[in-house]
Every structure is written in structure tokens, then in C-alpha cells.
Length: 286
Ligand code: FAD
Image 1 (cartoon, rainbow, N blue to C red):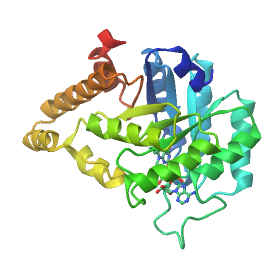
Image 2 (image 1 turned 180 degrees about the vertical axis):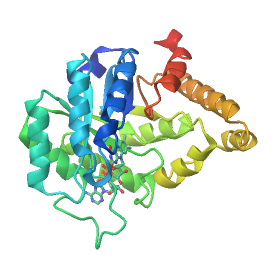
Image 3 (image 1 turned 45 degrees about the vertical axis):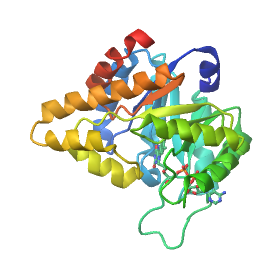
Image 4 (image 1 turned 90 degrees about the vertical axis):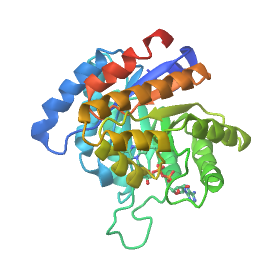
């Protein structure tokens, strides 16, 4: 089923995420994660694509597994450092295996790249155009409430986001954010810029202090001071930090749903137990 139709039909959607292993001998673990995530009856499960196309074969395999088990997969696909032929081949494989939903991404530019962007594609909008020309896919794209790290400011980033929407993106999924007001302000700006496709709010439960530095440096998103202070105070207490992170994610999602946000994506990080606890904390709103 196409995600745009699920979003149109349901009052609230909850989606989860799985990332493929780096080595084939760990594939069965990822498939077990998928089986556990499916017991939560998510509206769809997204499957990430390894940086610069690594693990790409596993992405399709796991997406196909989700479909076989009765779930709805969203297969991520990046185009940086690739060729049109290679990308067309991946799209053809997804199509042949009944995958209808693709999250079209440029991907991070490899640190050792000479000149940028590299390869046959410059931006995700070009990948969206290619996917559209290859079949009747439902296409998602990424968006950034606090701007993409390469953009000068949110306004110029949204101007580029409009190009992705106009190229044919059916929905957007946000980068993680930890202050709901950032999403509300971003959505207002998108509306004013003429971007009217659904925006799925991406929520990352931060359950270990080490995740904070990593999340901020990779994504450029900010951690509100009260949560940063709380995390600092739990540096020596992993179990308290885990509980605080889950509670923070629950509070954030509850705030979003109570404010009328319809679509929530939980960055599951291959941790079904954490996802289970987050979902428990919002079950009365679903
Ligand atoms: P783009 O939309 O191309 O944007 C990249 C930059 O270029 C932005 O600054 C944008 O403003 C600018 N830009 C865009 N179009 C134009 C234009 N026409 N002219 C000038 N500037 C332009 N990475 C992975 O490797 N695998 C994954 O599975 C993965 N999943 C993700 C899922 C989500 C929900 C998100 C938010 C990110 C994900 N990423 C993933 C990370 C993503 O690949 C990086 O953030 C990457 O740097 C940008 O990808 P993009 O598709 O947003 O790029």
C-alpha cells in the first residue's frame, strides 16, 4: 500500500525504522528486529540505506521481508556518488519485488570527496524526478526543522525543499528534533512557502548519554538545556538515563498529537524494547 494513501485514510499514523546490518551474517538479527517491530502494527517501517550506498542490497532484502510478513515498507535510497544506471537498477529491483514506497535522499557527501556534490546526482530532487520516471511509486523526502547542516538558514533550506515537493515528493519526514515548537514554526514556514504535502515528525528516543554528542554533531539539531542538564546528571546512571529518554520521547509525541500532528515516525534504532515502552506511553492517544 502507498504511504500517501495510509496518511490520507488514518487519523494518526505511527511508523518505525530499521537499519540493515553492515555484514551479511548479521542479517538474521535485523530480520528478527523487523518481526518484533511488526508486532506493534506500525503503519509502515522504513529501512535505511547505508551511507554512500553501503548495505544497499540488504535494504531491499529487508524491505521485501517486511512486505512478505504483511507490513508496509519504505525503502530508503540515496544517490550521492552513484550513477543513473546503478540507481535505475535498484529502483527496478524494488519495483519487481512489489515495493511501492521510496524515501529519496541525496545522502551525505563522503568526507574524502573531491568537489561537491559528486556523482551523477547533485540533489535529492533529481532522484525524485528519476524515480517518478521509472514507475508509480509513492515518494518521500527528508526535511530539517533546524535546517540541513549545509544550508545557511531555515528559509533558504525551505526554498530548496520546495524544489523536492514540486519534483513530486508525496510526503516529508523530518530529521529528529527535541523541541516541538521548532516543528510548529517549520510547518508554518513550509505552508507559507507553498509546501502542502504531509510532514511526518521524526522522534528519536535518546536513551544513552553518548547518543547526545553523536546526534548533535551528525544532525546539527539542538538539545534543549533542561534535557541536556538531566542527561548530564544521569551520566553515571544508565538505567535512569534510559527511563528519562523514553519519558522525554513520550512527552514529546503526546505534545505533538495533542496539538494536531497526525504522523509520527519513531527512530527505532533497532531497539524494539524501547519502541514498545514509547508506544505504551502514548497508547491512549492512538
Ligand atoms: P537534499 O534535499 O539534496 O539537500 C542537501 C542540501 O542541498 C541541503 O542543504 C539543501 O538545502 C540543498 N539543496 C537541495 N536542493 C538544492 C538545489 N536544487 N540547489 C541548491 N541547493 C539545494 N542518509 C543515508 O545515507 N541513508 C539513509 O537511509 C538516510 N535516511 C534519512 C532519513 C531522514 C528522514 C533524514 C532527515 C535524513 C536521512 N539521511 C540518510 C541523511 C541524508 O542523506 C543527509 O541529511 C544528506 O546530507 C542530505 O540528504 P537530502 O536528501 O536531504 O538532500
